[in-house]
Amino acid sequence: MSAEATRPVLLVHGIWDTGAKLGTLRRAIEHRGRVVDTIDLVPNDGRAPILTLARQVAARVESLRHASGHDRIDLVGFSMGALVSRTYIQREGGRQTVRRFVSISGPHAGTLDAHALPYEGARDMRPGSALLTDLASDPDPWGEVEVHVLYTPFDLMIVPPRSSELRGARSTTKIPVPLHRLMILAPRATRAVAELLGEPR
Image 1 (tube, rainbow, N blue to C red):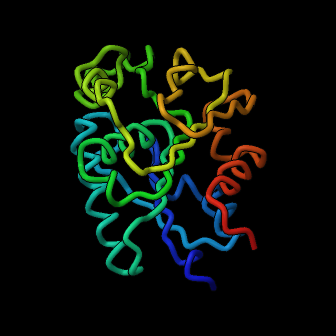
Image 2 (tube, rainbow, N blue to C red; image 1 turned 120 degrees about the vertical axis):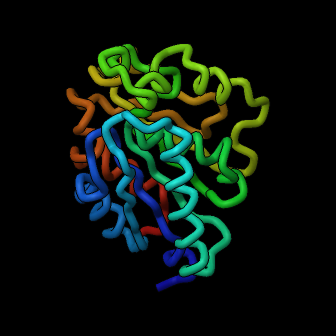
């Protein structure tokens, strides 16, 4: 295994999910020779502020960096996990510890669906929230982090779907699958993520 292949990839799941729900995506990335880990965010139901969850990601990243010997890891976030990952990068030191960030269908400009839940984390995901406004205000949100965005234009969880786009991303790819969850299940979507992370077999 090459030195680059040992660089960890951390997958961050969405609302109501666990790391196990990313199994299809994980296998697609591992098939290309990468070492992959997942995290279980607690709580996972939108109750906790996004910043609280971002601090859980920060702790896991530090553990992976120490265990692997790499200064920077690759980070993949899906749905709420994409916003959690972005918050970690912009507010919890991730500019210095993440090499590549792949955001999959994240509510970066908010989703109207977040109005259905009264919790603090859900409020963070509403369009125009204090968190989203603060993150969007950064003149240099990424530093040296290489950012890639994938989303489906048919998303009914991230409304409107273009909320998944990120200013400063190196690439933005629309994958026309009919459902939000298929972004971590459909072969064309998981293959696109694996290719962005590189290290082919």
